Amino acid sequence: TVGAAVGAAYEGVDEVALAREYVARKRMKQPGGQKAKQESARVMGRLLRAGFSAGTVFKVLRDWGVEVEEVDVEEAGEG
Picture 1 (spheres, rainbow, N blue to C red):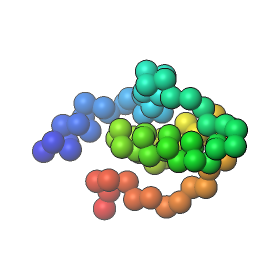
Picture 2 (picture 1 turned 180 degrees about the horizontal axis):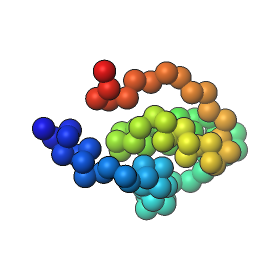
Picture 3 (picture 1 turned 180 degrees about the vertical axis):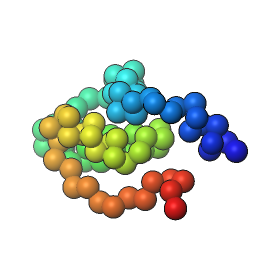
Picture 4 (picture 1 turned 60 degrees about the vertical axis):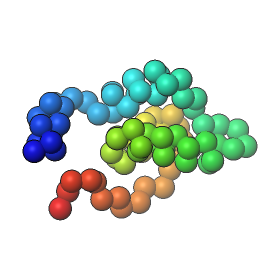
């Protein structure tokens, strides 16, 4: 299946490193200032739409020093 092929292709790849490369390539700015919460939500949504897992997105935001509230998000394909 497609899911198995993609899983095999990305086995052993650091998803957090891929997310950081994506952020750098897209020139996404670190959330800050008065609209930090809104900017954090925008970054989070953009990374999720790009296909990164919620856990990876939270790690990237935490690395930036952004306070995020983790919620239980079911990963696609689990079950």
